[in-house]
Image (cartoon, rainbow over all chains, first blue to last red; front, side):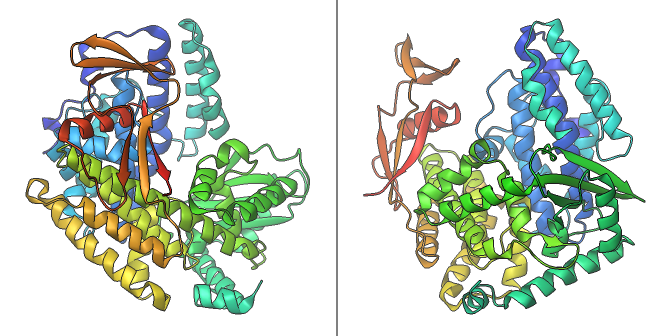
Length: 179
Length: 363
């Protein structure tokens, strides 16, 4: 399966509005997760070209992250980390991208098993680039020198967004500490 | 530090252990055209008071770093109130450094807490580590980095705490492996062909980490588990007592890999995984509970929805479930007996929805 066969962020693309307060918290959290953790995992994948076992571990962690993103975009409470991989493999992805279970397992290298010999990054790279393309706006890259400023600007905008819908911006505190 | 015990445990005496870490660090920094002195200068320039220690940590000292690895440092500040726990990002040439300042009093308190926790029973250790970040001043991630960290002058000032760290991590990973095995069995009982494998993968990775941690190879992030395991299997130091357990893990690794390639064709894995986890824990001297209890989370109430279905309500959330599973169920670590498909599926949904919990119970 190639990225063009996948529909990314279908709920956003369909124009589904949501109740303001929780939506802002979910969308901000998704933006943060993609910018900080997602980009870090992708860099880990690229660094591990001589370390296929590392790439396997990173691909699993990225899939678990995407399972959380999927739930938040579906306005659902994400499952605990212990269940994330199982849920993604059993049910596929739905809101971050429409992907059947078998396609998830293949794209993220799971179906290749625990003796990875070559990197599985090409399919993940294609997926990731397409996801960021489809995401509304530019997702900051804190791994770049210029990315620190982008993150701070994003956090300021997100704080204003929370205020705009009457949501306490306290949920941003862990992100501010990490920024 | 009991040199003989440390040597038997890790295969190296403390001096050689530190020298190996130093070698990893120097080789890595050379690939980045950096030296420990240059790092020390850069960090000291950012610090309000002269750090007690500046530690190089993470993949660089474990010999795992690659071309794109970050350079993670900890500056131990002499006094409280200077360090705010927030990481500083630095760039030297094209190298990205992350430096966190931790006050020495907080470090001392957290190391004492580690000593106390590591002496507790395994399930209490696992629970203590799970709650660590809520209770302790130094997060578990930085605790592990401190103990494993290499001072830029070439010593490991917190090496004395590696045995406690290793014990704590061995217990936690063993308990996590057991929970994963139970969930794999439950998912198989529920008829999940692929979800069960997700639990099995994580269970096996945790079993690998438990063995590694029991040999002094302690590292936090799950993304590194399989690489560290492969390095260990390829010729790392292993205790005589763990040889059979290592073989059993490798054998299951092959079986699980075949299942991942064709989930529909793969027979049940839960019973074998539960046995593997239990036997490995015994070899590592980790006393696991032999029973796990499925029960509703405290405060969750069940509200009728339609005949045959209810809403579970708790903590501001709601979950719609078919009526199955009962008020409580016990799973034995040596197998799931008496679970029909509908009950298993209902419990799994309730667990995933945060309305039920799976806790260990010793007989």
